[in-house]
Image 1 (cartoon, rainbow, N blue to C red):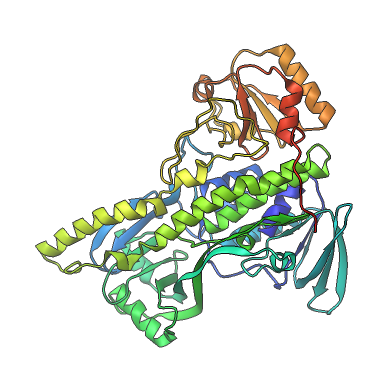
Image 2 (cartoon, rainbow, N blue to C red):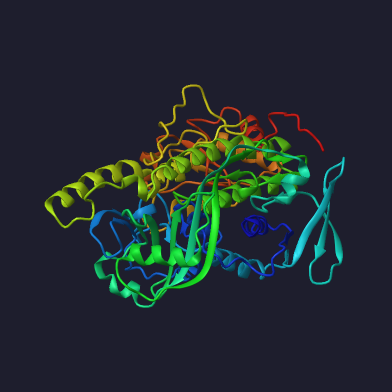
Length: 530
């Protein structure tokens, strides 16, 4: 997430230093789905094209999830267009999701940052300590692991994106609340020559296999020989590699040469940090929320944290934002994190073994009937995992910098159903314009006032003057599209740099109050210093 935050800040011209104790970016492909929201951010940074080029799958590879008894067993059901990853244009978002491992995303961001003079990425450096100053800013000590030299760095802000065992969080004394180790898993990364080609019409991104010998999930990492395979295991019972390989062969249902490239034993947690910041030090990603990866939210949620925090830090650095805007980071993101924790934990409760039943593998009339019954149960329980667009796009922020009016009623939240809304706090509804561009392509790096009806010129002029006086970046965009006006159903909508709506209305009766409210100057909150 550090590379993402650095990308957001450097896109706004700010100097950053990324401290990473490893010698390079990670290689384990734990996160595999890059969701539609993350891809929209990549488009905003001009990186969506190069990122898709890194996808290991061609556009004709089936973007679906398959449930079956074994890899070469009987089908149970399919989830087509899983995660909205089919390469087709959709009116609801500008970029479809894709199967792109996390290390590929990190590689693209790293290449991008290395071209930025304001970015300093230091591998083989470990954070040792930090000290905050009463008048703002942080002094950071980092050790060069090659030379053992300890460097002293000065920064206005420090953000800990350093994972579940966060050094930054521990130094702050921030506790995690919730449940630890609610389930244990083993994932194997494998080489299985020829397997992908032999599947023919059974190809899928993920195969969830329901059988009494080895209920598991497996899938291709590319169109060649790389595969992942995983299953839940009792936390107190160690299973050696040889026994695991036997389970892999049983789950496939045919004999193949299987080579273990790497093994990852891991646990699922359901944890949130008690607070996301102390003074000028913030937490993001796994450092402040930990949950199951089922649903594809883990990496993507962390990227969303970095974007939200990035533009708000930028506002303070540029002098137009109040510290209240930084307080809104936790206020806005934490309820979303809680929703993701809940749905991800529910997904853990519906793994392959949940659907075991007698006769499910039999090539008989009874077996076929059992598989049809199982398919209904799978669709009921697993749709939130493989079609979670509601939680990806449909969440709504509530904070002092979201300027709602009395009577604003957002659609009811749903994990699976996304209902576009202009209710303040919601993601700005997306639309394709007649020239083929996305509405999002016309939003500025700062705030954008969407004009969707006849202009109120004097009010607009006063608003722009108030923004200039405050130093807040603001542009006006009036799309020449009746479909956009019909979608928004309001004369004006003020869109934030993160593409969420700060305010909407038919007129702008108090431009100064609107500008002050959106940038956090209309409210004062008390922050606890270190």
